[in-house]
Length: 266
Ligand code: ZN
Image (cartoon, rainbow, N blue to C red; front, side, top):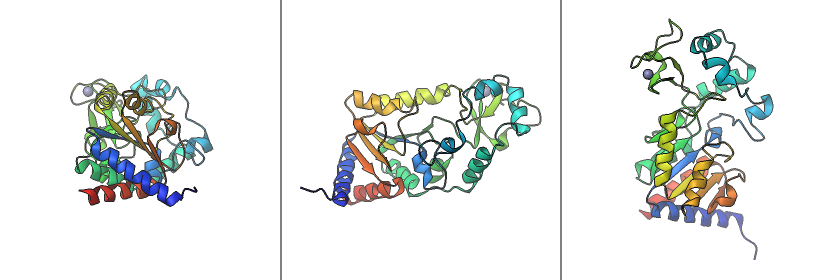
């Protein structure tokens, strides 16, 4: 019998709704794919920025923020962040607004279905859309972070008159919160991800390739403990073979369908 793709998608969405509704502690893990529909290019894959321009050097963190004063001088002088790739990325970030995928995820949290959202995105769009309990594992472009106590600050809260800027709380050097190549994931965020994942019995992965660790490890941890995985992505990913349900399509469209189906049920 030939399977009708539209019918298969409806069935997959129904099953995803079922799993999410039954879950005691569902978490979402999101990646660049969610922000593509907001005009932000992904890093990897056929349309990826790094596919076109090459990956940043692996020692970027060491070569800049090992010495915070020098790191800031390099930022201020435009030595880093001023390449063609960085300018294009920065422009896209400035113009981006949340899309229906971001709003659907925030709504799922509001409805009490999603307990937490782990994102690899640094673009702030989940926050703007209203997600609350979040772990921004690669940081947030609109924040600064104390390298000593991990406290976050808005850019307006920290003076750049003397470099490196220092933390009002502990006096440690402050850097942009975005995690650079070669920089360890901030310990507080990593601990939160592990704590949330350890409680999770259903993980919804949206727009993530499942290639970048440590994030790629979280769905695998959930699966290995007998939890369920739902994937929403345009393409097959490294996570697809482990997923209970894989739905192919734009995250904005699929996530909106999932939310409206849940509303119909309740
Ligand atoms: Zn501090």
